[in-house]
Structures are given as structure tokens and as C-alpha cells.
Length: 399
Ligand SMILES: Cc1ncc(COP(=O)(O)O)c(C=O)c1O
Image (cartoon, rainbow, N blue to C red; front, side, top):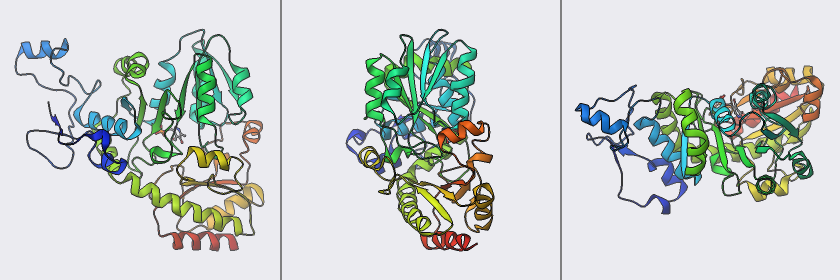
């Protein structure tokens, strides 16, 4: 089994150092960069060794659906950085969300979710769970009374995303965690938009954090991946067996890409957030733009909470273009550097029209309730030079 680097006490190191070294295991070759173990299984020296591996006497690897050295390094690095006891990687962010929710409930249970969830997450809560006898209630996540009054005797899980996608509402994680725990329910937080750099839901009382690693963790649009983080107990009780037996395993190759992505996460996210703040201010000055939503701006409805709960305003900006869908399409089509796509957290700046893409599955009434208007664009700010990006928005705004 590859050896963990034991020369430093990882608990006492800064985040940037953990993101470079955390979880590294080296094979007998002593490779500097993390090894890519692109293997589905492992060979044993003897029959007795195989038996010992299977009965747990020898803690080595068995099969890459269960665990794999490259995947384990990624999980360990994520756990150290998040301040979680345990982590499990999955094939995509949606595999992580699905397992984190399905692993906690059975027929007859009830889930409460903030209404402003990413479309596929809403599908899990609204459509998939009820098919298996798990009821769900959607609430306005910013209204704590709605969380309280949604609780039923059989409520097992609360789930939220903050900031929300795409309207960038900020939900009070500590307050919702307290309501969940009063109800003996667990809180799952989808921390994708905040990034692991800017928000630590476990410290705020959440029981489980999920990521689409496809986003900032890769950060260069190369591969899909997901992570579930929580206490050893949470992972053992709700996640470990479900993943092992149902098999939404991440490819070791993708885990390796994500592991290398973590090395630069802090630099990228810091730069993207600084640029996002400038972009938000520039957009707010353009005559064709009606409203700019950025948690780091003083005019954001939950700005004070965002300052308390997040280390920065984040890498995402939402804004309304005057003229509805036609105005938003025309503005998006005029952008030259910013790409039209639906990923986020990427090195490349990306603009998305949520009403016709990521959130088109919702009815117009549901979109209106969430504040997703036809004129809204969601922007993921990348790593281009800030001046080039600002110039691109100014020229697009000129019409
Ligand atoms: C907030 C949020 N959660 C979950 C997901 C799902 O992640 P993935 O595409 O990696 O399955 C996404 C994006 O797709 C997202 O934006």
C-alpha cells in the first residue's frame, strides 16, 4: 500500500499548503507528483493475502469501485481542507447530491429543501424521492419561519445551496442547521457556488457538504466529479455502503485531474473573486443593465449575512439585462471573450441564460417565484485579465 507522507502534522498547516500536500501517498518509486493508479483492481501475492484483504485484516485496496489510491488521495485532501473527518468522491456532483440524500432516507420519511436549488437537485427532491415514498417540502430558504413550519415528525433531512444558483441568494446556514437539529434532522449543504475556499458549512453546523468538483475544484472544464464530506459516523451510516454497492465511482483519472486542480484552487478562486467584484461594479454602471446581484456588494439583500458567512463575495455574478429575453440574448451574443456555456468556476469566463438552459425545466411560475427572469444572465468569472473582461462587458453594453 502506498505510504502517507508522515513528516508534517497536516492539522497545523494553512489551507494553501494542505491543498498542495494533503493526502499525498507515495509508491515505492517516490514519485513527486501524485500517482495515477488507473487500475480497476489489485493483485495479491497469495491466496492468504487476498483473504486478509477481503476480511479487513490487511487494510489495502481491493477494487476501484470501493476505493483506489488516487481517489483516496483526492478524498483525503478534500477532507483535510474542508475540516471534515471523512470524504467520498463520486462520478459527478449529481452522484454526490443523490447519494447524500438517498443514503439518509427511507419510505415514509420527509425532506425539507430550499426552493432555489440547482435544477437537477430539485428533480431529486421534487420528483425522485417522492417516487420512493419520501415526501418533500420546498421553502423560501431565506425565510427561517418557513423552515420551522415545514418540519414534520418524520423530517429527516434539510437541504440547501448557498449562494443559490443562479440568483445568488444567501441562506443563513447556522440558523437553518439549528432548526434542523431541533427537529432531529440533518442538514446537507451544496457548497458549489461558495467554493471550498469561501465557506465552511460544517463549521456553521451542517452535517454534510457536497460539491460538484466539476466546477471550481477542476476549474479548467476538463472532467466531472463530486465529493461528499462529513463526520466518519455520517459517511459510515449514510454514504459508504450506498456508494460501494451502487457504484457511482469516480474514474481514478478524473480524481487525479481534480487532485491537481486542488493545488491551484486557492490562487484561482481568489483571483476570480477579486475580478468578479470589479465586474459586478462595472455592470452596475452600464445603462442597459437593470439589476446586479453579487453577495459582495452592499446592495445585495443578504449582504450582511454574506459577510458573516463567506470569506468573499464569490466568483459568480447575476444580472438583469433590460429588454427581457431579447435583451439578454443580444447582450450575451455581443460578448467576445466571455463564452456562452453552462459550466461555472472555470478559468474561462462563462455567461449563461438560466431561463432557457439550466432552469428551463422549471415552469414559468416556478422561475418567477425564484426570481429567474427572462432578462437574467448568470456570469461565472474566469481568469482572464480583469481589464479585458471589463472592456468586453462595456462593449457589449454599448449595443
Ligand atoms: C449547485 C450545483 N450543484 C450540483 C451540480 C451538479 O454537478 P455535476 O454537473 O458535476 O453533476 C451543479 C452543476 O451542474 C451545480 O451548479
